[in-house]
Amino acid sequence: MIETVLKASSALDAWLREHLGRPYLAALGVGLVLGIIATVQQLVEDIGSDSVLKLSLFVVFQAALLVNQLAQFHDYRQERRQRRADKAARAADGGAGPAPGEPS
Image (cartoon, rainbow, N blue to C red):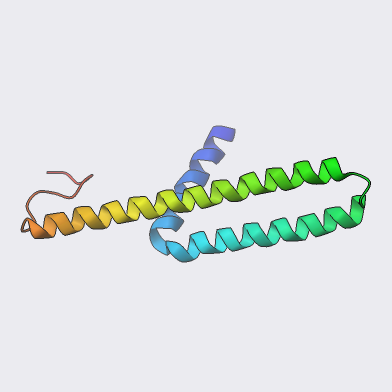
């Protein structure tokens, strides 16, 4: 069951990246940052200043999620640049040969 959900999520994410690209990734990043801010504000109100350790651990975890999102965005940009470079190289060669991943 979990495997099915993970595969479906991955496929949906890939489809959204392919068809929406930067706006999709930007929306994810903005949403994550806004979610972190709102959650930290709510957490501070709920626990007060008595539990600085809990708050610190939570902020570290949320920062790790943000770093992960930024890394995924970087990977996506690198893949996109590589596809563009491959396309330009094929065009410079007069379109010789199939695109990567295409049958010959």
